[in-house]
Length: 141
Image (cartoon, rainbow, N blue to C red; front, side, top):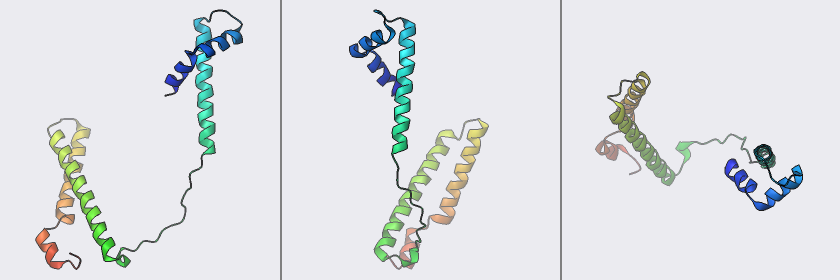
């Protein structure tokens, strides 16, 4: 981004005239253009850092106590829905990764495939339950 902006500035006719006046020459050499591009880039970087220093985002420092058992039923239903969506997306992502990389011989990739497989097994054994079983025991259908 900086380079594009600097090249636009350096290529402008107004800037070219100012540079000729700065160096007191009629025609700018490659050295002049090189020095000017470094100056332009450094000035823009300095400006951006100065601007970033002036922007302060509020930072939350207080701990929020959140008790799921005190939530209303509507909130619990929404929480279950979002949690189910997140589990499904992660399970699909892991399965896709395993399918795409299960035959690769790279040791690092092979370890990632084993880790993804272990995550899939945990999801299927511990988190995902049969709908019929859930429908029978839930108090919030």
